[in-house]
Image 1 (cartoon, rainbow, N blue to C red):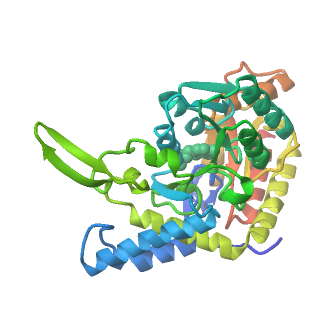
Image 2: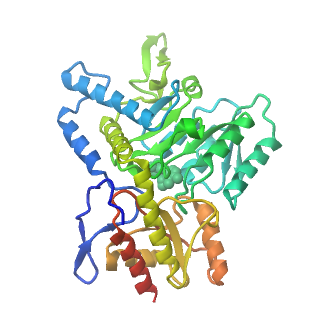
Image 3: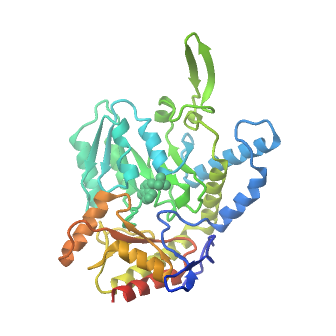
Length: 419
Ligand code: PMP
């Protein structure tokens, strides 16, 4: 197998098993939260002694912290290959980023979103949009493009703004969506598009310019930087025209008592959406992860991950009764995220046994993408003639630092448990 690019923290953690022994933990839940890269941990440790307030204090440590924060913004902007006039807002994570954008929609905006999205990309729009159009689940990347084209074409825009929100890679199946084609389609109809890159960015290079999207949202804790930062980056016009996402210090130019009122002049740039003391460690950690991924090289990372995906996919497919979940049926490449059900097995019980008997950490449930997961589990149950439609799935996900042994242990455990 190719060498492991990028070591992560926590490879030596041992966990107790039900039989009283212990074993090295196999972290196979990267899609929920990935371990920290060693590089992230080291960069944060180097900075912590110099920690101070950002954009506020006059002291030396405040100056260093302000520089670290703004350098992080530039590093992440470079990582995402933003356009020269794009801007980047630090947020708490993808959910926060998409809610921020939803709060900045111009009056009358209509939103188009596939029903297969993660709830963070599915649910924020009802709050700020004039209308939300939910598109049916496509069964191939081409059908996704066609469905969007039809939906946008069926309702010409005139003077209304329209926004499409789409995932880069599914947090349930790992399948990669045809972002460039969807962006072209959106723009041809005069709509804008935001990319939910929460699951794509840890596994693939995300270039805003090459993909042609207007905004991108991502989470630091899924990108090997678990210190509470996220990003919304892209076009600034809707954001600078909107009310500040949070009202508070740092977002204002001037605040005056004016008769009975308090008069506020909000910042005109995007700092109007970063009220409150910034999360400088989170931003610094995210920048460290971006640098480490770039330096490791996407070709190497992708090749290593493709080998692991094939190993797990082939291994599980050979276990009787295992059904891998897929929306596009093999028509799209996938990142290191795979969900499956086992005939006659409750997914929650299976995941619990994987933990207590084998020290393997996976996730089970509907993965905050209820419409998609219900549909895929329902199809899988129907195919084997069991199931009452209430089923859930097990998800294994991995990335940088995952050794073959973790994948092999999972396959062997599923085979043994379900034999
Ligand atoms: N979108 C996708 C595709 C995700 O997988 C997730 C996290 N599971 C989110 C959005 C939300 O990210 P966060 O919980 O970090 O806000």
